[in-house]
Amino acid sequence: MPGIRAGSDRPHPRAQGRFDVGILGRFIAAGAALGALAVGTLTAAPPASAWEPAGMDRCPKGDFCLFTGLDGTGSLTAYRSSQRDFGSAGRHAASWANRTADYSCLYPSAGYTATSAYYTTTPWGAGPAEGADYGWDDAREATANWRDHFGSVRLAPTGHECGDGHQYVDWGRPYDDPLGTPKPFGSFLDNGQSQALMRSVEGHLWVLPGGSDPRPVDLGGGWNAMTALVRHGDFTGDGREDVFARDRSGTLWLYPGLVTRLGTRIRIGGGWNAMTALAGVGDLTGDGRNDLVARDRSGTLWLYPGTGHGGLGPRRAVGSNWNTMSALTGPGDLNGDKHDDLVARDTSGRLWLYPGDGRGHYGTRLVLATGVPAGWRLFAVGDADGDLKNDLWAVDGWAFNLWSGQGNGTLRHSVLWEYGVGIDPRETFF
Image (cartoon, rainbow, N blue to C red; front, side):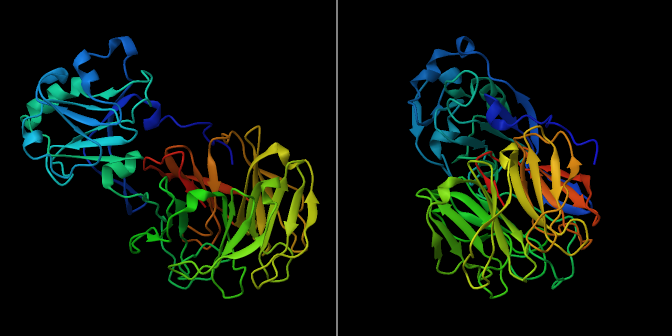
């Protein structure tokens, strides 16, 4: 698959000192509507010496401040949390400063609403100036357009949550399969359609249905305690997808999937901090039970066969020198031979297909793509574009990219399904 871009030409919000966000819009692609933030002109912050005026320094670190005068002059009102309605303070404000650790979205009306535009600043210290993210130049424009009325401000750890109030992002399938379409994996909600799982910056685990399905499902918080998250396949024998998670102590846990919630976790064992990569790969051994692979620090790839009732059998080595790989993911069957495969990216940016043979081994590998940056995060959720062939997703640091499986061991980069949603690099998708 030639022609994969080696990087994104869209600047990431955290790489900028300050940016203005324009009209809240919708990206339309392949006939489906996806919620997204329409980002206006991105401008780099000036160097520290250019921050002006000095009056903005009156805003304490950790606060969001309103000033009654331009350029940080006049009376100051400081806030430590989102404000749904500034009230009188907003009606008399003419400039502001964001010195919090969060993104700030400043709206002309109460209730986080905007008739045409709102202003966004990045977290304090995130820009080149390594200082407060002041809104002094925008304040003049806001004062003219909004007539000295700042209605509300939302503070949030990610740009998209700042803009729409949601921890989760909009992820979508290009087309829906008929409900109940059989899939090797990827249908966490057990309806035959693919869903992605996402861990938010706040540590909540979300099921992203995509398409026209209901809102994402919150599977609960506390997931930032986990150093690895893996899915793909039923490991408990109930026909539903489960989740593996490794905690900081190195203990591996299995969380049984119960469609819209997770069941009581099962302890698999300790010592898993010795592994530098984990991947759920479907049924590699051909016994009808889903399996797990893991790479240790020496570069050996190990197969852990699933028992079919919530456990893993004795491991066996399936390869060596896997330290040359910077990512592993199980896409299911990509080459159409009915055996589940493995996709790996090496340190030079090549994407490899390792075809499963159904007997616990991988056959001769094939190059799927080149120039795939190390920063791109790969995940697979079965068939996403409705053609009954498994696909691959990549997060390029800002947007989702769909690589459509052709059913013959090749991928096609679906450029119509490369869309920006303001993904934060701390968010996990699997």
